[in-house]
Length: 138
Image 1: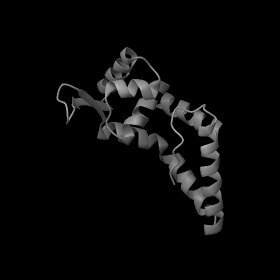
Image 2: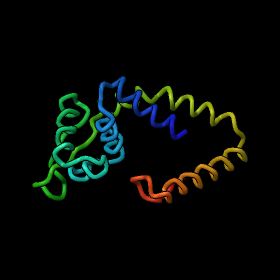
Image 3: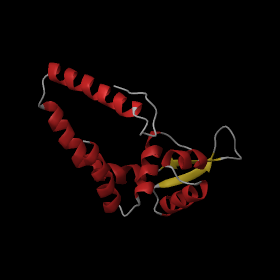
Image 4: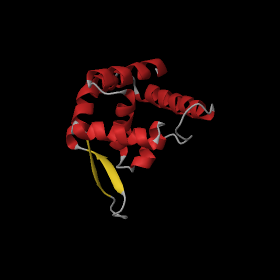
């Protein structure tokens, strides 16, 4: 699954003619609007590189900049509806396949698999090789 996840990100980026950093930026913006500095940290690039990524995504209509609601001197970057739709269009076949796979298990099997996947995810975070923290959600 880990290898398949990496392949999916590479293929979606290729189909959308984005770099993997640009796609990763879109993924982070899919969660919530963020400042450029936070994007740089999350994506693992310099602030200057993050600015270039945001510029390219904005040119394509995937993101937009807006004044921060709390501090009008700051800028927030958010995913546009068009950007969200473009990503979902590429991911929809995967979502359908996962839904179909999920439907093939009964409630007890899904509970067992869910417990295993939460445990495995926690183990991966505990390895120290992931950027995100140890928090695991259901």
